[in-house]
Amino acid sequence: MRNFIDQTGGLWAKGKLVDKIGSAFTSSATKHGGQESTILGLIPTMMHHGMVVVGLPYALQGQMGVEVKGGSPFGASTLTGDDAARFQGAHVARIAEKLAS
Image 1: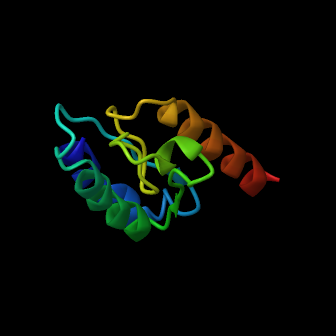
Image 2: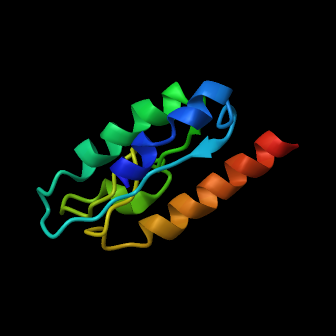
């Protein structure tokens, strides 16, 4: 995915992604697999493109537990015990709808 995104320089030069919604999620095999750093590595690129970055808000109460669940305000990851990816997708859709109106 990083390779794919790194090839979007032509889109950047033409401003084709300005005001588009950007959001990231990730997966790993362990609870210390770099989930947040993976997502944080994508956000600056989206911002350079002028995208509106949408994360995973703490409105998802599943992130508030003591045990490792895999979610963070930066995006969902597969170690989450709840439905963080669906919540994030719905959140992105709500933001996109608001921006379109």
